[in-house]
Length: 132
Image (tube, rainbow, N blue to C red; front, side, top):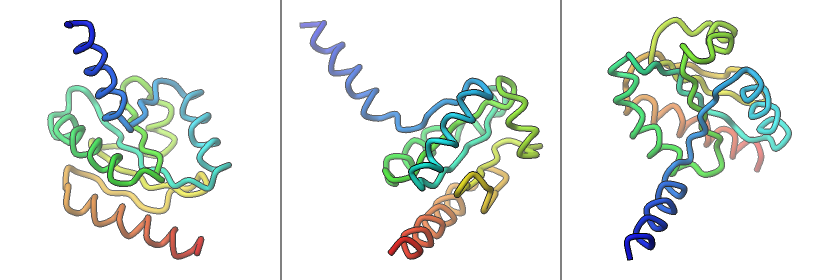
């Protein structure tokens, strides 16, 4: 019986987590290239384990990822993948970067859930309008 509960928990965790953790420059390049090939927009959360506002945004970022299934949500720990953070000139956490075709189209610095949701919504709407 316990085993079945564990399976359900694992399944729930897989269902819940739509945010992909980037752990290297190679994985960053892979996901960005894949998204570009599929014309998939990307939202990146630059975070740090020591930054309380950044960590506090994680559940909200997961919620956004579930709300926008046609967008790729990436999480980058600036201490683990410094090269990506410096390439995109991320200097404060949390920083949220919206990307299309491999290029940054918007950026928001700070833990502001309402503004992030608004910007992602506008971003997704503009892409859908462009595609349609």
